[in-house]
Length: 250
Image 1: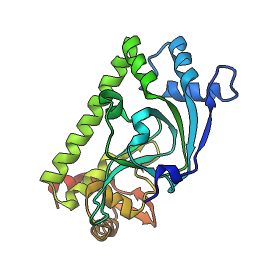
Image 2 (image 1 turned 90 degrees about the vertical axis):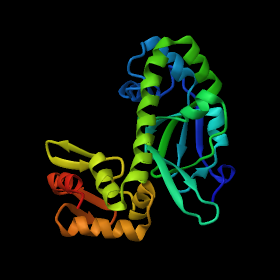
Image 3 (image 1 turned 180 degrees about the vertical axis):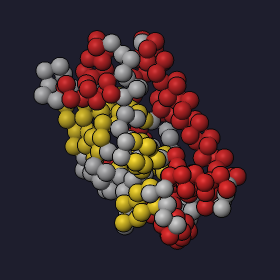
């Protein structure tokens, strides 16, 4: 396991209105439902205390002390938050933060260390701010509460669903549900989002099983022409077939 102190990351100075990339990061905030409702004055105030961090894919893993003092907004890339069994080394992915997400809201609310680890799944760009400053925003701006509370509710529902799935469904059903949940339908067909291009090992860690088990489930869906698989790249060929699998539990 790599500690945070061993990781090289890039940190830029706090953003100011005359900074070259100020408009780029302002637009990134505006695209996020977590910040889109703010006035320009509040957005400028927020950006003035943010600085930019970039993390490299695969080589960043740290424990919860970092987010005890720093609050993050994801501009690009994905970060997994996970737990590790110290005896077996088995991992379980709690959730994946993607562009527009904020973390760590648990540390933000209770001021206590969050006993989890995080790792960049891609090259990641983040906006970071001292967590005490963010707490001041919550007290100062009612708009922040109106956005933060629904975001928290959504995260709680995700974790509740994950707990229910682990307790009530077998690995086959959990696999089918995972692919359905992250499939988006557009004019070109069905596209896998968030978990796209993840290794089978990482997908197994999301549903709480082994790589061998997830390989069997994916191969079965491939054989039935529901998935098209090319190494880590998975495409949904037959969304209705996937939905039927869940409906029939077969």
